[in-house]
Length: 483
Image (cartoon, rainbow, N blue to C red):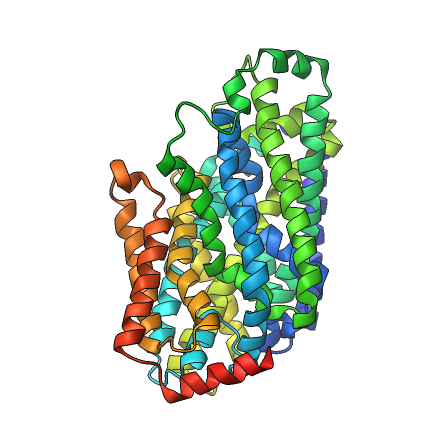
């Protein structure tokens, strides 16, 4: 694929817009509260699209279309699981988390909330949660950087390593400068662009006569949600992706930042509409790629959207559509980097190193934390054989198993204790890591399933053995009365 001037101009213009938003956000960021949660002043529409864009990432335009391109609509079960899980997350977690984090001493991060929720004066729970976030987010961020490198490599013909460096620098820049305001507002615009791209590309491809002819010859198995290779373990594994939503810090932080709990319902409707339409577009893009490239298979299935956008449109529109991929990648990495920055600032530096640090000092620490995590993630992404979907699935399972049960139990069970929460996080994270190394039979089941179940059971068991403190129970009662 050769680079064309219109595509280059479109890319530069898009990146200039993102950096402009970053500078605008920098001017509005005065305190560490602004930098981490935008001062809890985000509107419902921005919150909704920021949740969707930061959630779906490059997986929506690279990983999922590539999986459908290879395996057909049988891969759609991931989408079904995600839609159901996201809806439950909005319905049961969003409002409660928004209210409880503010009541719990205005908690700015998940580890901060856990510490305040359980009145853990020793800081054990905060430390365990913070370390877990940094470990799994490093892999998650790496997946986005792989996606960015693939994009720059294919579009501009760059060496993979150089493409990785350029993509990483671009994404880190506006996150470093603008914090939560920059991340949320860029996510809003990126979510809009992603939606348009996922609608335009498959419609344009399916409207071509050649594509319609190839559709008549397409293997019917590609259009079936079930095939001879479908297994119970495989089906459960795909649907289980929905469990991950309850524990994703970059999504949960949006719930914490929305201006009012009363805005949750409107935000949920916007977010779920965006998600359903976008997933349908991604599935259609994968099938469109199967038809369009029937005679010339792609070397890398995850580049199917890139090739379709380049082949089916004039360079100006193609450039804008390809920029949508960068949007998807940027929207997730910036959110992940910001969460890591928040953890470093609030849960390590202010907690253990300098409790009386000024807002200016904390924001500086947070910004340099962004750079540190990005460097480690980029090193992991140096392997050009890395799979976007593979890295995402590992990190998604880690967060879903380690934090999903602890978030749900914290919001719904009065007798949940500090020791129970620690056991939940540790068992969930360890189970995912160990299960991932095993193969064959039951071990082919997606690691989030055993991780989520064992973590939940551990939390309940340890809470029975080591009951919740009087302060923790009183805190929960006060929260419940505020609902």
